[in-house]
Image 1 (tube, rainbow, N blue to C red):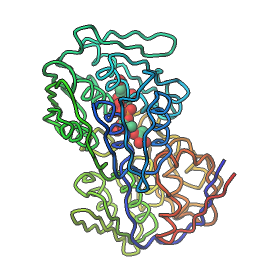
Image 2 (cartoon, rainbow, N blue to C red; image 1 turned 30 degrees about the horizontal axis):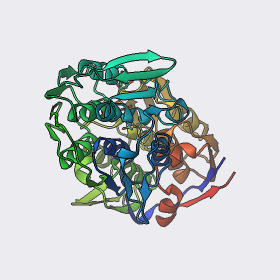
Image 3 (cartoon, rainbow, N blue to C red; image 1 turned 90 degrees about the horizontal axis):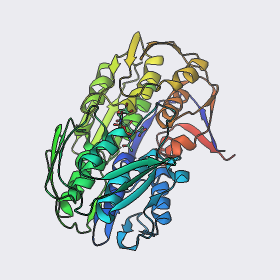
Length: 421
Ligand code: EPU
């Protein structure tokens, strides 16, 4: 198993390019299943989760064509098997995103039921209930969601999410795009990745309106055509590199990103003492050599502070001036990084769903273990500022969501190296 070795203490300095968003690329790839003709997806990040999605297509009989720029052409007409097997779903929960499109386009889908994961129980009941409200016959059997449409096909409906769900909203938008009549999704997710997906469907000839608000309306159409679509920038990768600069007292410019979708994160970075400058597709951060100030955070669905940036801000608070309280409201078990950060000398106490982080003068490098994607990112950030060497084990979690993390950090001057294991 590969490890990352980091020698901390260098303020990051320089410019890097942000990759396409994992959490947009996954639903966009699933959406290609809806088209009568092939679709091409551009700006795909080179990540393990994307490879898993391609592998899943392979299992279903679809062989996407990749060109030298990593654009992927998917022809859903070659599908042979309407099953997403447990072996793949257990490695990537987002495989559930093929459920809605497979059912709407091909009339049947069997997707292994994802179990709990390192950050919480993460049920998919809302995906299932929403599809049932559109007329799907669904049974949960042998660890699989087995879904079929009635002979008359899926029909439009009004569905209210009890809890805001990002992939739940995405699954139902994709199914509704080919259902008969109008579907209204209430308390829908407002995340920019949902807007990206809705834009793709509209480009394919669909009728989705209200994306970016909590009420999304989908007028079903008989057919969707393939299209060429470029995935939006990764706001969480952007936020992670901004924190990397802030935690080390550095100065960076991130290109090919979008400051308008990072407002809650940028506000907190400014509160932490960062000078931020933005253009249409870039963000620059300069700490002017200062130590960060502690900030209070409460995660919530977009446009509030993202849960996917919580771990990184706990790392930032751990070396900040003062005490920062970080409350996690989306997932019940997303504090695994805290125990590893404490091993590096952080002073973090957990009380219920709040982490109370007392900034220390310095962290000390240590061997630590990554437990999930964003938790691993927080350990990298801590390693960048810690005295001495940090060795991070189980970095396959990082490779799921950060393209070439060590190369990008090296470009910014970090002393980081991958050790093949
Ligand atoms: N929930 C239910 N029932 C459902 C669906 C969700 O109770 O049927 C609950 C979940 O247990 C959770 C809350 O609703 O408490 C929100 O979960 P959501 O469904 O929004 O999460 P997700 O769609 O599974 C996506 C991202 C996550 C990100 C969350 C929240 C993708 C592929 N994944 O997950 O990304 O944390 O939204 O913003 O889009 C990551 O990138 O590291 C990551 C975990």
